[in-house]
Structures are given as C-alpha cells and as structure tokens.
Length: 215
Length: 389
Image 1 (cartoon, rainbow over the protein chains, first blue to last red):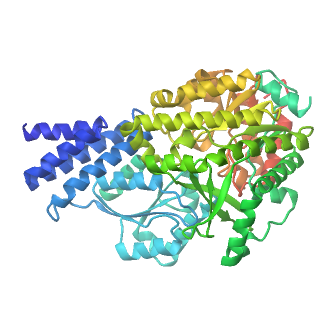
Image 2 (cartoon, helix red, strand yellow):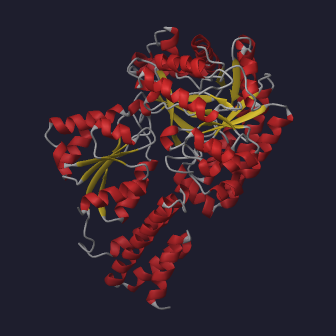
Image 3 (cartoon, rainbow over the protein chains, first blue to last red):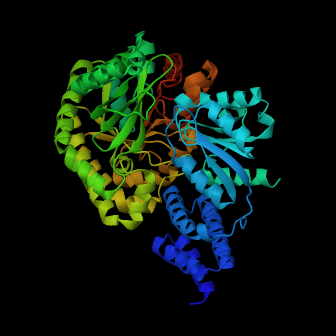
C-alpha cells in the first residue's frame, strides 16, 4: 500500500468514526520510522479535526461524535507523539484551563483541551475544583496566551469574578486573555464578569483563542 | 377554577381561567428562605471527622424520612408562594465517605452516580451529580448485581413517598410525580459521557442491555409513582447542551426511541399526562418528542437559545410547553420590570389556546424567592384568559 493511501485511511478513520482503521493507519505510519511521515500524519489528524469542528458548528455533527472523534485522535496521537522530533510542532501558544472551585465537572473542559491541543496549543490543565489562587499562580508561572475557566453550576459562577479580581489585583489581567464556558454561563455574564470571551462550545472556544494567537 | 383544573385544562390545550404557574424542584436554600427556616448546621458537622461519620450513619438509616421531610418543605414553600403545581421526587441514595470531595461525603444513587454533598454560604445543603461509578462494562454489571435489593427498596419508597405527598398536599397543590432522571441520563451518566460515546460505537450490545435495564426500571418507577394517584408525571433527560442535542437525533431514536414509546404508552394507558424535562437546545428533537408520545416539554432553557415563539411555531399545539423563565440571571438578580416583561412575553408567545405552564426553567439555591413572587404576580396580571396582550 502506498503511504498516501495510509494517510487517506487515517483521515477517513477519523471522519467516519472508525477507531480501528485510524489506529491501524497510525501504527503503519509509525512503523516506517520516518519522522517526516509522522509529522504529516499529525497534520492529517489536525486537518481532520478542523473538518470535524466545522461540521459541528454547521450542525452536521453532534457532541457525541465530537467526543468520540476526540477519543480516536487521542489514541492516534499516543502512537504518533513518541516518534515526533523535538520541536517538530510549533506551539500556537499556551492556555491554562480549569474548572472553578466548588465545581467538579470536566467534560466541557476536556473537549476544549482536546480541540485546542489539536490546533497546536500547549494546554496546562489545572483540573477541577480549582481555587482562584491556583489559576493566578498558573498565569504567573506559565505566562499563557489565555486562561480558560469552565463552570457548570450557577452556584459557583461567582468564582470567575474572584479570579478576574485577583488577576487585576496582581497586575496580571492585561497580560492574559480570559475565556469562559459552561452551562451556567452566558455572553451577558461574560461581559459583567469582565472576561474577554464566552464560548458556547469547545470548537467556538478554540476558534476564539486561535484568533488571539494570530491577531 | 382550582389549581388542578387549571393545570389539567392547560395540559389539554384548552384555555383555563389564567395561565397556570408551576414550580420545579425547589432547592433547600430557596425553600428555607420562603419558609423563614434556618438551615441545619451541617457544615460544622462535616468539618469534624467523627461527627461526619455519625451524620453519614444517620442519613443512611433515615434516608426516606429525610427525603419526605425535604419534599414537605418544598411543597409548603411552593404553596406559600402560590404555585399551582410542583414536582414530587424520590431518589434512593447511599451516603459514603469520599475524602476527595470538599465536605468528605458523597451520595451514591442506585443507578451508579456519585453526587457531591455541597453546603452553600448560608449553610443550605444541596447535591450535584459529579461522576459515574461504572466506567467499564464489568463495573456496570457488578453494580447492578450488588444493588439488586436496593431497586426493590427504591420502588417501595417511591410508592410510599408519592402517596404521602398526595395525601398531605393533594387538596392544596397539584403534585407532578417525577422519577428524576430518565433512560438517557441513567444510561450514560453512570459510565460518563466519554465512555458512553465509546461504548455506543465499540460495544453496542452492552449499551442495548443497559438501555433495556434502565427502561424496565424506569417503568417500574413510574408505575409506583402513578399508584399514588398523580395525574401528571414528568420524566427527565438532559438531551441538549448550549447549542444543540448531545447526540444526533437519528442516533437517539435508534438507541432510545422504543424506550420512550414504551414509557408514553405505559403512562397513557393509565390516562395520565407525560411531560419530559430536558435542559439545553433541543429544537432538533421537538418532533421526536411528539413522535414518542410526550404530552409536553419542560424547561425550554432560554440561555440555550430556546424561544417559546419559535417552539410554538415549530410544533404548534402538539406539545404543552412548560418553563422558559431564566434561572441564570432573571430569577436570581433580575429587576422587577425585567421579570414582568419576560413573563408577559412568555404568555404572549405561548399561552394562547392553552398549552402553556409558566415555570422557572430549572432550580438552584441562588434563585431568589422575591423574584419568584414577582413571576407569579406577573402571571396573575397578564395571564388571564382570554389573553389580551
């Protein structure tokens, strides 16, 4: 089989939600030991996920499909990543993300991490139930392009304001863009809380940070 | 017209004397405020390991009484506010030590979900679903095996609870009996959404078995509720997120369609009405709800883009619409004018010809009772039939 066919199988495996086909193609490419081919395979995954994101935003694909293709791409990247040459992928920037304190939900956050990672961002995941201090410390440590906060519960949405206030107090607010998402939040809430953007879904969120990355 | 006639008339797409107003599941924080009750000092007990362990034992040994007394508070509060209807709900939980949770206690429901016990700044307790406890096929089967005795206990307690609520409150408010979560949520939540998506593609036979199990259990649950004499039941599955359904509608149909048809038939065979609650943006599923036999849809979350006018345009009077009052801003910190304007618009968009019940689109502890009062006042002001807005 020509290597170009294998790339095609990798792409169709992702876009047709065929885990076995995608993983077999990734193993086959990895087996060549050709770092250039591995880099092209990673680009194929990125392109496929861009297509998936577009399909989702157009209403042709649904969240379950978005989640499953994320699972497939994770498996594929687990095969390809160890073979990539250091520095082969240029980072689009660093994003620190976490779910606010008092909230233990992580589904939306994890989907966002998956998509933003596939778009070339270096993701720092602080996990769930993250206190304001930890968000601020991570901004100081990693100097990210953006800080993402997830919040599913209305009872914890005030935590976002606390983080913004703490960033201001420590003169960090102007150095980082802040994006929020989650069931409890709205565009209006984002304006009131003084953050830069509200993302109704992970794909839109990734599009927003991509714009920030290349103004 | 009394509350019962008002609700049932609206459910038949006829015009009652005025638009009915229903509560949801009131949180303890909201009901305590309405009743002027101070919360029990649970936070202090949770902070002490010995007391926490004692609290856990007490909760486990008196669980049905705890649920009954909490629901009694919700109903007293709903009646005091002037709601025509409110939900009754019984969920079977086991309280366990969970060091990873802030207050050290988790509640495990019989379906396989972990809920975190939370305490708000005023000391009111609540519980939030956090994660599934059956992340593999093996774990799910062993969970079901282990919990077999609890399913019978659940059905017995459900029967007792709803009967008690009907006896104690049936002459003052209409009880809408709810099993809580439905087949969709009871299938995916115990395994987590990521695992569920994986299993749908990789282990379809397993998913089919889980759905069959959850459908049978839900039918037993609903039958136990209906034995109490309730006229209306409300199932609940969160099919939608902010911008659309969680799954492709055709895929939901393939996996769950027969379950929902069985449920509708079971409820209608007893001449009861079946409402279904779902959060999120669900325009793409409204026709499915009609096909499955639901009489109405509850929530219609405005912050997920659900607009009553559009929903009515899409499904006409094939579904009763319940809810649409925002709980992220409007009923938390909206002005009186904003509440009144929103109620007025909801009535204008959905209430003509009956088939609309005004209600908050969901529930949480920050909902302000004063805003609920404004909502009811506005319903009385603008909701008299014939609607003249």
